[in-house]
Image 1 (cartoon, rainbow over the protein chains, first blue to last red):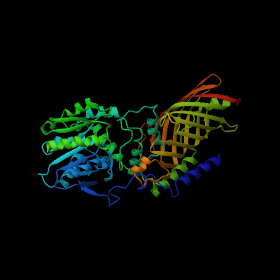
Image 2 (image 1 turned 135 degrees about the horizontal axis):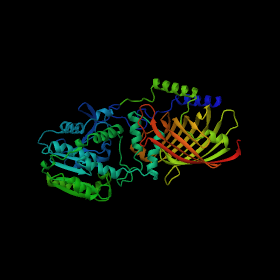
Image 3 (image 1 turned 120 degrees about the vertical axis):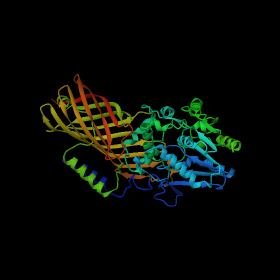
Image 4 (image 1 turned 135 degrees about the vertical axis):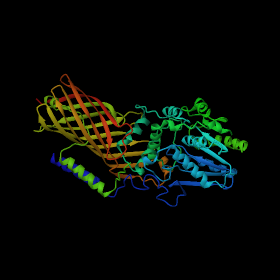
Length: 323
Length: 237
């Protein structure tokens, strides 16, 4: 028995030494953020360094692209760059705590208002003047955030392009989430998902963001077979933001002033996302006064990445009509 | 939120110290097979056990245990478990033993050690983990039943990560390699058994898992095991 104990102590001691990687090491499992790599394009908004880029002529009508999540990034939205060749100034940014933007601790995700203020800061940073047309293009959570901004500023946005927002109040959002996140204990992908927790644990952003990336395998119940391309997920951002919504569901209502936004909104839903569908699209889009509801063929929830071929002509037609 | 730096020297020394103290104190990380020491001592030397339940996934576990002829009761065991699914690419193999240390009437305390090899494969990564479980159980052990409290720690010693093209397309500099001390989970729970005839026993274990230090807990931080034991081999009487 003594030998067994001594061997175990030796294994334990050896395991704590050596030159092998740690999951918390910078740059080994997830890319560096703007804080560690100064070569990544960034802007500072409200004291937080954000990964951000803009394409096109800065004086053209400005499209601000708002990614989903919370905790995803704008890599899957880059098809919007094509609009910079059509006479639009296209702005991308990774929201606080996600993508390649600066990481924040959970306590710093206090209110949706911080996201709205951040979006306002990004708009102010890039916009040449109030006469420049402003277009918001949001996907999923990004479409909810765009709507939260419009709810507070119904007359400041000239055109709105939304793709499958979960909902504009918590009841709608919760209903959609419950249809997309289903754990089936006999299922291979579900077991793969939960099995990983015994291999790696952590509380640092590098480890947690990596674990979040691994969790995407097989958890795509929105009809997408493969998760869209990304730079780096923000686990703390994602979890803290969801908790923030659960704790304050009344603050997830973005509908009070939407009827004051009179110009037409392009509202897209996908053909293949069974958790969304026409009925949910009609329910959510009804909060706007003037909506063009469109189904994007041949894709599921990740419309800007996998449905661009059909989404792009709809956007072009809408923008040509409204601006 | 506090951050737990896996590579800080202070924490490394603290970890070494904690592990050493727990070893020297004969504390036992990790929960092994649920054993009724009274049953074992009055029964056959060998046992086959089959468990189903939730252990980081809906799992099925098959194991073998053998009681040594020693002054203090020692049971060596090995088991193999797989999560449910349509692919046999994930498993956990454990080998080790438990020692009955203290007995005061019907109250007994035992400790155990298990070495672990586990594997998980998805479309994103292949993970091979080498780890160890140490556990301590204490409770009432009667001839036909037992009820005990268990505390265990499952520590990852080294984890090999090999990423797929999907992951590499998202981050081309991602490193395929061994990662030291990548995880740890505490287990706290209850175990119980009921003997059925001469050769059969039913047992159940339930409890919670808790990630080490300030690490975030598992998505489902629980475990549950329902099993049956078949005794065979020579009689220990």
